[in-house]
Image (cartoon, rainbow, N blue to C red; front, side):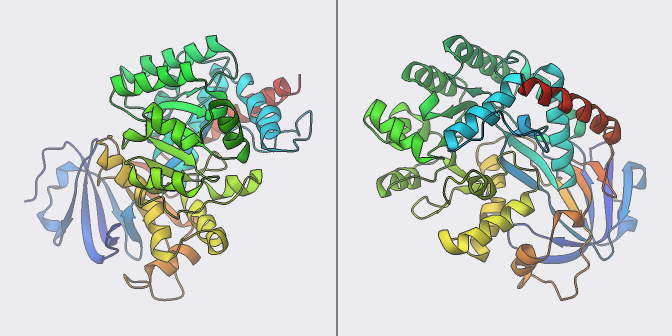
Length: 432
């Protein structure tokens, strides 16, 4: 009899398993261990399994099973923004979009809305197939304890995470210091990153303090870089250097844990800096188009490119498709590289030994296709066929957190009712 030391396991019967790295298809039964970074076991004969250890049995006949997804860059704090009233002033450029929309919203966040934003985001990620989220948080009037509150929300839903607080000088040096203190307090207890907003809102003193934190806790920075041309212009006029040079000189590019987000307005020298470094870039195609700031191009940036949603939504399959389609005009992306960038977040997590993205994170896809799907044509289905509405079941760290498209770990309806109530309150605060 097949036995395992883990207390309970999930059995996926009659599965078509797709190896997320090789895209090899295997007809098999899968035994899924419970726990952080647990294993999966391929079983030819289910009679060999110790049935007393099975907590769930799911018949996956006609379904596709593969590694679940992960979000390379998210902003959970924007979760209650959908449908909000127009800002007091119509923004005419990217700086004003920040000033009148996002910096207005984040200042109005409090304990209730931070927690609900994290819960809503975790649920949305899970239902779209993602079991790990790298998030970049901001709530200037509720800094202390915000990361731990978010972590508990993600944990409650069952989604693993790598969080940071967006340290910035834009709300004053006292708030910057609070951001540093919140970051250090969190890093003492949890895996995380040192978050920075962008070069144009981070002075030299704050930058030095953030890099010091990064080094002392052996982690990386998570920072926006050259999302808009204004960021470069400010850096050159203020520091007499381009942003990548500034961050390189500060030590941010030295860590394989550092994530540079957006990376749109770069010259060839900057691309070479990043391409030769060990850090990672995160592209966010839809956000870039929404803010009209430019288009990502991976030329010269190396292989360490992953994808995020930038808080636009929580659907990584949608992000991958958007990156592929807009990239046909503006990027070097093709079918294999679109899938590689989609999956690179797993390599980032594994390379840097972060926990929560083990083999026992799986998604079961109910994908009824009118045409054959196999190892050779999977990428065509990935771009043109498979969508988040095909996600039927999701297993996170060996626990079934989505069953038949319904969250199993929390009362989704109750949370959504609360989020609508507090979302309306948030919108009212933004109008004052």
